[in-house]
Image (cartoon, rainbow, N blue to C red; front, top):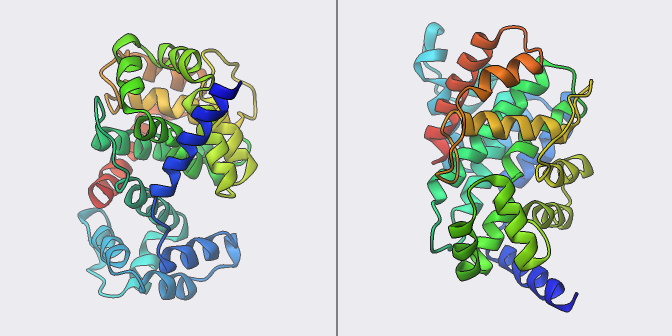
Length: 283
């Protein structure tokens, strides 16, 4: 028990290396938490305080997909064009990837792949939560974005042990099993605790823990954890994965059929479009 507590405390201390969100992002995310009560003008006022965020939003708003009515030069018009939900997702994606990029990790680790998988899972989770009945759909993007946060902490705090675990693991389930054997907890459990300390909503915390499940049922509505787990599997099947494990491409068709997504081709096209937009601005 003492060893487990030691590992857990050391891993959570690695979170101290994560920089605080900028004041502009904190204000913007606070406004977004108000839901339908937030206005484009309020959100634009917060975004304009951060040059990087503002330029990223303008870039996407002026991309080929959105320029049928001409280019926009102001953040307010860009947000109006993109809409509050897409702007919210961009803010979350940019703020989280900016913070995680500062963490120093060595040995068997690719930040680029970690970042890409997190973004892909977030976008897919958001799409799933809008395509099928699900609990807490408003938190799907955030839950998908943060579901692997504990992995970053373990890799940062224990690079040698992490490298040894990766040498033994051949799948996500193997990774969780070896983590519990070495540390006494999985990176999903650690990530859930971290999110609790950061005051993330309980549904997001629970969804992170759920992702260590090897089997689960398709209930209706889907739990947020099931949404994120399915989204992560879909990202892996599109070869947007953190590690070079064998992920079956056919799982995409099987999952979307099991989830009863009505238009799989449209679903995947929307994912690919959204992923390209956010991946370009966040990486």
